[in-house]
Length: 141
Image 1 (cartoon, rainbow, N blue to C red):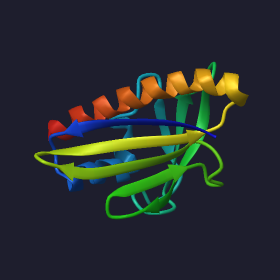
Image 2: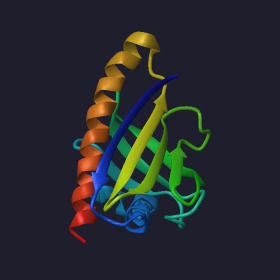
Image 3: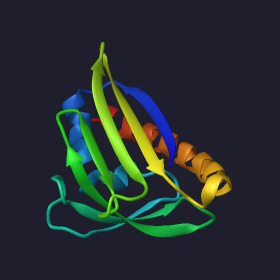
């Protein structure tokens, strides 16, 4: 299984950032370029079991993915497909001085070593873009 980790410092409180990250209704505001929020699959949008459908470009083209909240704690959220077998994403939010550090980690497997090499590059770009967008949304509040 491969891993991609990115982080960013944001001038916002940890609670404000966790609120944005946990609310799937807000996800469309900070999805990376080329990714789309399609629909909410559950009536719950913030708790464990909340599920949404997104279109993401990870491999050679865009594909549809179900993203469900699998676990949540005081400073983290883990989400992925309902089976929890691939594209597991963990968001970690921690105060650091005047800023808050948001780290996002994706565990995935995609077509063996060669596929993972190319998917890792796309995922890294997507995560950097997503974190920049999250920062812009959070700091504009």
